[in-house]
Image 1 (cartoon, rainbow, N blue to C red):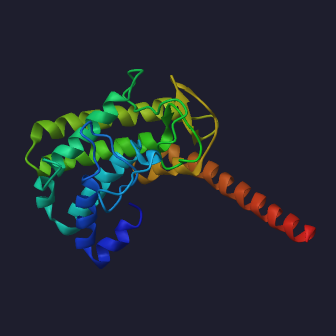
Image 2 (cartoon, rainbow, N blue to C red):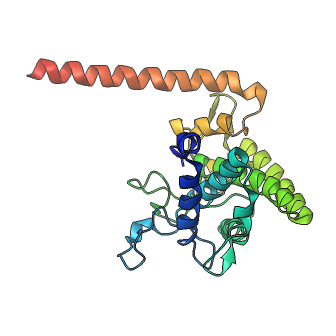
Image 3 (cartoon, rainbow, N blue to C red):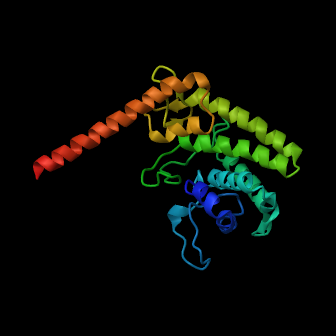
Amino acid sequence: YWTSGLLLFVEPAFVRDEILLLARGIEQNGSVPSAIPVNPSDRKIPLWTDHVDSGPYFILLVDDYIRFTGDKSILNVHKNGRSIYDSMQMIISHLEETDHNGNFLPEKSVNSLQDWLDSIPREGEIISNEVLYFRALANMAELATLNGRAEDAAKYRKRAAIVKQQINRIFWNAKKGIYAEQCIQDVCNDRLTNESALAVLFDVAPAEYRKPFFRSLQGLETRNIAQATTTVITAISAT
C-alpha cells in the first residue's frame, strides 16, 4: 500500500491491476491475506492468511486509486463472483465479527501473527489495526456515496464515528501523552510504538492530543537513535 502512492503518479493502470489481483485473494468470509501468489496454483503460506490490517489496506488502496483517477467503475468490476464494492463490504463485516467484547474494535486472537508485525505474537486490539479500521470505515462511507448507496454510507459513517471515539477513549493515555500499543478487554499496556503515529495521519487524534503526542514520538525517536549510536560505538570499540 505505502508504495502505491508513487505508482499512481507513474502508471495508475498498474494500481488498478494490483487491486484486481489482490481481490482474487479475498475469502468468502471477508478475510484478507497479506499476500497471494500471482499464479493461483502456487502454494500459499499459512502466515499470509487473515491479516487484520490487510482488509483495511485494500479498501484504502481502492479509495486512493479512485481519488487519483476518478475511475469509479472499478467498484463494480467482478472478481470471485462478486464486485469489488461487495468484497469491501464483506471485509468490513468480517472485521466486525472479530469484536468479541462489544466495544466496536476488531481483535486479534491469542498468539496471532496476523498483521504487519508478523514476527511477534500480539493479541487483542492493536493501535495500528484499529486506526486502519477507522480509516477503512470512513473511506467506505465515501465510496458508498460514490456508488449510489446512501444507506450504506450512513451506516459506515456512523460506525466510523463510534470507532474513532472508542480508540481515543480506550487507547489514549493523557498522563503520558501516548496511544497505547495494545489493549485487551479495555486494559492497555503503556508502551509507545511508532505505528501509533497513524492516529495522526488518518485523523483519529484530536487536535488537543497532537502536541503532547508529537513530543512523545520525538522522545521515542531520540531514544532509538541514541540506542543505535551506542550499539554502533560499542561494536566499533569491540573490533
